[in-house]
Length: 356
Ligand SMILES: Cc1cc2nc3c(=O)[nH]c(=O)nc-3n(C[C@H](O)[C@H](O)[C@H](O)COP(=O)(O)OP(=O)(O)OC[C@H]3O[C@@H](n4cnc5c(N)ncnc54)[C@H](O)[C@@H]3O)c2cc1C
Figure 1: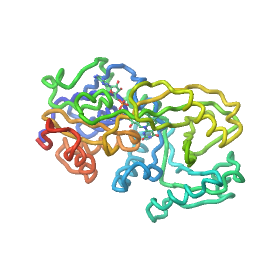
Figure 2: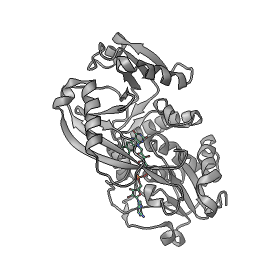
Figure 3: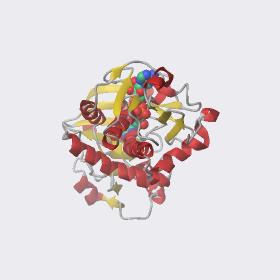
């Protein structure tokens, strides 16, 4: 592809910001313009995310072929934090999965789907206490330590990217409004593109953010539970993000009483101190998802769409953005096929002229 002089990125969620950042690096001579309906978007999926970078823990929701790409994203986030000289709490401390004694079989089931390598191990009592001293190892005596995982603070990461990039132009638009003004339009509007991508749907995720000075975590913690699975992502200052429900609905960004009670009781079962913790935020986000729950890069003339990141926006956006930049630059990355294949196969209906 001839190097474009100008590219518009539509949408400043994690996908749009990451696309703009990576395109600036790969195509320094190209002018990049970013549009969003909000100048500092608050009400998008990205702003509600936990920020777990969990290639292994997500194997319950993600085919194994994405493991390599997802793992590469961790390195890219590390490079970005260094390049932007901003601490957005990107840490590579792994993650820990636990279950109550009566649910131990859930850990065995999950370990059965993990690849046989040294990136994870089953651990017991004392080893759990060493990793996470706040946990009562008598209650949680079995766990899985997933070593090759990380986490970050999504809002801080996006703020760091926004500070580096040209200011966002606040405008509610569709690609047709601007396609004549740019060589290429990268459509990263998440749910905003649902009129264009036939089978894009919303999957609601409800979360709590709490402050608990009596509890400490070094890494994301997942509780396997037959009814109320839950994860806790640590933020600096004893702040914890707790999530998240998976509800097939794009209807509302509010949280139901039932979900609030379920999240809170599962949280209390992890550590009593959460009973006195202070709720800072109770909200919900809508994840943009495609039928296979995996994202796509698809082309339609001058418009390239990156969408369907579902539960994996922070996990996969860096590597998707890199694949996109290489494609525009005319080079090939093995991961490009992973994302482009989905787009070519099914999701963009007959309107897509992939590869043109
Ligand atoms: C509760 C919850 C927890 C999550 N936890 C994690 C996690 O731990 N790890 C992980 O990797 N992923 C996680 N995710 C998933 C991740 O948040 C999403 O995959 C990701 O945010 C999708 O990013 P996006 O940029 O495609 O969409 P969005 O973040 O929704 O951004 C789309 C942007 O487009 C803009 N827009 C839309 N229409 C228009 C228009 N017409 N004109 C201008 N602008 C427009 C919107 O304002 C918005 O800013 C979580 C999601 C939720 C909801």
